[in-house]
Figure (spheres, rainbow, N blue to C red):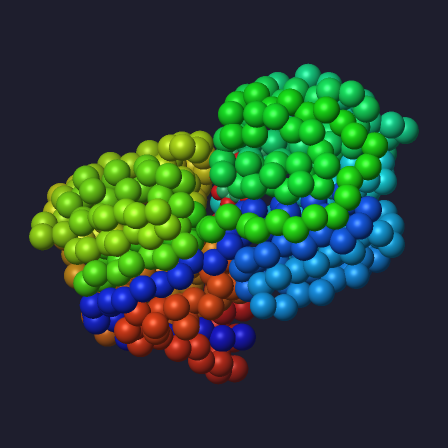
Length: 428
Ligand code: EPU
């Protein structure tokens, strides 16, 4: 087990390149199960979630080649093997194995998904969708059993706008008989990315990126080559980092339209922003103004950037309010930021940040992926050394973080935890 050490307080400069989107990758890889010949995905991020999915594809009989961010999955010999425990439980997005395996084999046994602990994360809308398509779904001792004689297209209205349910129902429906209509669908760019891959595989999907998606089922899907979209959340994290601790940083491989809500908020704070086709330049503000943010479904302000944004707001003059309407309990990073001298209180679904405050280095723990990003940014802003543990969360979603930060002039390194530190963490 390792910790990340950050020598804070040095202004960062230069260019950082964004990797492929984690939240696309974790759906694109399971989507390959639906084909009958090899599928190649280019530009995948080098993160632990991708490595975990690679081994899950192998576990069910797929043959996988993965090098230089390109993965080819040959799904022709896959079988519907029960995957109740182990790796499945470590990965939130393992729920996409349900839709993909149901779509191809009409049966699946998958453990309940793990991933970041952000409060309750039900999958009732996924299940509602599978049942509408004709599957029986039962929960037996922590594993979900899905079975169908055949899948038939259906009209499905999502009671909650859900990225996962929208994608999962698309995966199950592309090989169902007849037409499926998903109403009140999520509109995130990752949904368009998955629909593009499936269409390249021969699926018939219209309306991805709007709130009504129509899918006409086909009998079989074939292999193809697909390039993943850039990670808008990783891009947003580096933009926030640039605003918080930078002295002129260019973020490369970005689709600026995917992060308009963040750009608007950074401008409101007073940060300089210039966008071009695939790059965003972020320069420091003369005065950092307090702003309020409220997370919403896309194209609103993403919940995944709320935590990193909170670290930036400790620099702003006055009182800022961050409200998370998607995950009301996504505030585990706040106690850690307080250890670093931040003046923040949590009231219900909101965090109230009073600034400006000079953060101080401290020993802190990442409780989830984006909490980790928030603490890394705080460490770069702080005086002195910050030590971040819980790196397994950060490694799930940020490709080559240390190299990218040091490329911007940061002094960041990983160190093995001592035996005492490992004991302390276990008992914490
Ligand atoms: N919800 C339900 N029932 C469901 C599904 C969702 O009530 O069946 C609720 C959730 O509890 C939540 C809201 O609906 O309050 C939205 O959840 P959604 O299903 O959209 O989230 P998800 O698909 O589980 C993805 C990302 C998350 C990101 C959310 C919201 C992946 C693998 N994960 O999760 O990403 O926060 O959408 O945008 O795509 C992250 O990257 O750090 C991360 C957690």
